[in-house]
Image (cartoon, rainbow, N blue to C red):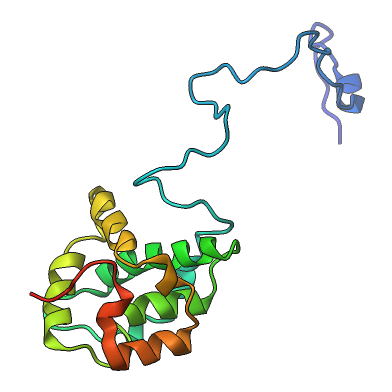
Length: 179
Protein backbone atom coordinates (compact mmCIF):
# COMPACT_ATOMS: atom_id res chain seq x y z
CA UNK A 1 0.00 0.00 0.00
CA UNK A 2 1.40 3.38 -0.94
CA UNK A 3 0.30 6.59 0.57
CA UNK A 4 0.06 9.82 -1.26
CA UNK A 5 2.58 12.50 -0.40
CA UNK A 6 2.75 16.13 -1.43
CA UNK A 7 5.02 16.99 -4.38
CA UNK A 8 7.45 18.98 -2.21
CA UNK A 9 8.36 15.84 -0.14
CA UNK A 10 11.52 14.32 -1.65
CA UNK A 11 11.23 10.74 -2.85
CA UNK A 12 14.46 8.90 -1.99
CA UNK A 13 13.71 5.42 -3.26
CA UNK A 14 17.06 5.33 -5.05
CA UNK A 15 18.87 5.61 -1.67
CA UNK A 16 17.71 2.11 -0.71
CA UNK A 17 19.54 0.65 -3.73
CA UNK A 18 22.92 2.00 -2.64
CA UNK A 19 25.65 -0.36 -1.48
CA UNK A 20 28.76 -0.03 0.67
CA UNK A 21 31.54 2.21 -0.60
CA UNK A 22 34.97 2.21 1.04
CA UNK A 23 36.25 5.47 2.45
CA UNK A 24 38.91 7.18 0.38
CA UNK A 25 42.42 5.75 0.65
CA UNK A 26 44.59 7.32 3.34
CA UNK A 27 47.88 8.32 1.71
CA UNK A 28 50.10 8.36 4.82
CA UNK A 29 51.02 5.13 6.71
CA UNK A 30 49.46 4.24 10.05
CA UNK A 31 51.72 4.81 13.07
CA UNK A 32 51.33 3.67 16.67
CA UNK A 33 51.65 7.19 18.03
CA UNK A 34 48.69 7.37 20.38
CA UNK A 35 49.40 7.37 24.15
CA UNK A 36 47.96 3.89 24.78
CA UNK A 37 49.67 2.07 21.90
CA UNK A 38 52.03 -0.82 22.69
CA UNK A 39 55.00 -0.20 20.43
CA UNK A 40 57.38 -2.83 21.81
CA UNK A 41 55.05 -5.75 22.56
CA UNK A 42 53.39 -6.88 25.76
CA UNK A 43 55.04 -5.33 28.84
CA UNK A 44 56.55 -7.84 31.25
CA UNK A 45 57.52 -7.35 34.87
CA UNK A 46 56.52 -7.71 38.47
CA UNK A 47 52.78 -7.48 39.05
CA UNK A 48 51.83 -7.46 35.36
CA UNK A 49 50.79 -11.09 35.14
CA UNK A 50 51.32 -13.45 32.24
CA UNK A 51 49.22 -13.03 29.12
CA UNK A 52 47.56 -16.11 27.71
CA UNK A 53 44.67 -17.02 25.42
CA UNK A 54 41.02 -17.25 26.52
CA UNK A 55 41.69 -16.44 30.17
CA UNK A 56 38.07 -15.66 30.97
CA UNK A 57 37.22 -19.34 30.53
CA UNK A 58 38.97 -20.05 33.85
CA UNK A 59 36.12 -18.34 35.71
CA UNK A 60 33.60 -20.64 34.05
CA UNK A 61 35.71 -23.67 34.92
CA UNK A 62 36.08 -22.48 38.52
CA UNK A 63 32.30 -22.60 38.99
CA UNK A 64 32.48 -26.38 38.53
CA UNK A 65 34.68 -26.64 41.63
CA UNK A 66 32.71 -24.35 43.98
CA UNK A 67 30.62 -27.13 45.54
CA UNK A 68 33.74 -29.27 46.19
CA UNK A 69 35.80 -26.61 47.99
CA UNK A 70 36.91 -27.36 51.56
CA UNK A 71 36.16 -24.07 53.30
CA UNK A 72 36.63 -23.30 56.98
CA UNK A 73 34.36 -21.02 58.97
CA UNK A 74 34.85 -17.44 57.79
CA UNK A 75 36.15 -18.43 54.35
CA UNK A 76 34.19 -17.63 51.20
CA UNK A 77 34.11 -19.50 47.91
CA UNK A 78 34.37 -16.20 45.98
CA UNK A 79 37.69 -15.41 47.68
CA UNK A 80 39.03 -18.92 47.03
CA UNK A 81 38.06 -18.68 43.37
CA UNK A 82 39.48 -15.17 42.94
CA UNK A 83 42.82 -16.15 44.43
CA UNK A 84 43.17 -19.53 42.73
CA UNK A 85 42.04 -18.45 39.26
CA UNK A 86 45.17 -16.32 38.97
CA UNK A 87 47.33 -19.31 39.88
CA UNK A 88 45.49 -21.43 37.31
CA UNK A 89 45.94 -18.76 34.64
CA UNK A 90 49.64 -18.58 35.36
CA UNK A 91 49.91 -22.36 35.07
CA UNK A 92 48.07 -22.30 31.72
CA UNK A 93 50.32 -19.52 30.44
CA UNK A 94 53.43 -21.46 31.48
CA UNK A 95 52.28 -24.18 29.07
CA UNK A 96 51.28 -21.59 26.44
CA UNK A 97 47.62 -22.52 26.25
CA UNK A 98 44.15 -21.58 27.44
CA UNK A 99 43.10 -22.70 30.94
CA UNK A 100 41.76 -26.22 31.49
CA UNK A 101 40.18 -27.91 34.50
CA UNK A 102 43.54 -29.39 35.58
CA UNK A 103 44.93 -25.86 36.06
CA UNK A 104 42.17 -25.03 38.52
CA UNK A 105 42.48 -28.40 40.22
CA UNK A 106 46.19 -27.77 40.84
CA UNK A 107 45.55 -24.25 42.13
CA UNK A 108 42.76 -25.28 44.51
CA UNK A 109 44.69 -28.33 45.71
CA UNK A 110 47.91 -26.41 46.44
CA UNK A 111 46.08 -24.12 48.86
CA UNK A 112 44.10 -26.98 50.41
CA UNK A 113 40.70 -26.10 48.97
CA UNK A 114 40.44 -29.62 47.50
CA UNK A 115 41.28 -32.93 49.21
CA UNK A 116 43.47 -33.99 50.87
CA UNK A 117 42.32 -31.86 53.79
CA UNK A 118 44.88 -29.27 54.86
CA UNK A 119 46.37 -28.99 58.33
CA UNK A 120 45.28 -26.23 60.69
CA UNK A 121 48.36 -24.06 60.09
CA UNK A 122 47.68 -23.91 56.34
CA UNK A 123 44.02 -23.08 56.92
CA UNK A 124 44.94 -20.24 59.31
CA UNK A 125 47.53 -18.92 56.83
CA UNK A 126 45.26 -19.08 53.77
CA UNK A 127 42.31 -17.61 55.69
CA UNK A 128 44.34 -14.46 56.23
CA UNK A 129 45.84 -14.59 52.74
CA UNK A 130 42.55 -14.99 50.84
CA UNK A 131 40.39 -12.69 52.99
CA UNK A 132 38.52 -10.26 50.75
CA UNK A 133 40.62 -11.01 47.67
CA UNK A 134 37.48 -11.31 45.53
CA UNK A 135 36.94 -7.55 45.84
CA UNK A 136 38.22 -5.79 42.69
CA UNK A 137 40.34 -3.38 44.75
CA UNK A 138 42.49 -6.26 46.01
CA UNK A 139 44.40 -6.94 42.79
CA UNK A 140 47.77 -6.65 44.53
CA UNK A 141 46.76 -9.28 47.09
CA UNK A 142 45.56 -11.63 44.31
CA UNK A 143 48.86 -11.16 42.47
CA UNK A 144 50.72 -11.94 45.69
CA UNK A 145 48.85 -15.26 45.92
CA UNK A 146 49.93 -16.10 42.36
CA UNK A 147 53.56 -15.33 43.16
CA UNK A 148 53.55 -17.70 46.16
CA UNK A 149 53.48 -20.78 43.91
CA UNK A 150 56.81 -21.35 42.11
CA UNK A 151 56.90 -22.39 38.46
CA UNK A 152 58.26 -25.84 39.36
CA UNK A 153 55.05 -26.56 41.29
CA UNK A 154 52.92 -25.21 38.45
CA UNK A 155 54.57 -27.58 35.98
CA UNK A 156 53.63 -30.63 38.09
CA UNK A 157 50.69 -32.76 36.94
CA UNK A 158 47.67 -32.81 39.26
CA UNK A 159 48.52 -36.31 40.53
CA UNK A 160 51.99 -35.17 41.65
CA UNK A 161 50.52 -32.10 43.33
CA UNK A 162 48.09 -34.33 45.21
CA UNK A 163 50.98 -36.56 46.32
CA UNK A 164 52.99 -33.53 47.43
CA UNK A 165 49.98 -32.35 49.44
CA UNK A 166 49.94 -35.66 51.28
CA UNK A 167 53.71 -35.67 51.93
CA UNK A 168 54.91 -32.09 52.33
CA UNK A 169 52.60 -29.38 51.03
CA UNK A 170 55.12 -26.68 52.03
CA UNK A 171 57.37 -27.64 49.10
CA UNK A 172 54.66 -26.28 46.77
CA UNK A 173 55.17 -22.71 47.99
CA UNK A 174 57.92 -20.18 47.36
CA UNK A 175 57.72 -19.05 51.02
CA UNK A 176 57.46 -20.76 54.36
CA UNK A 177 53.88 -21.15 55.55
CA UNK A 178 54.66 -22.05 59.16
CA UNK A 179 53.28 -19.58 61.68
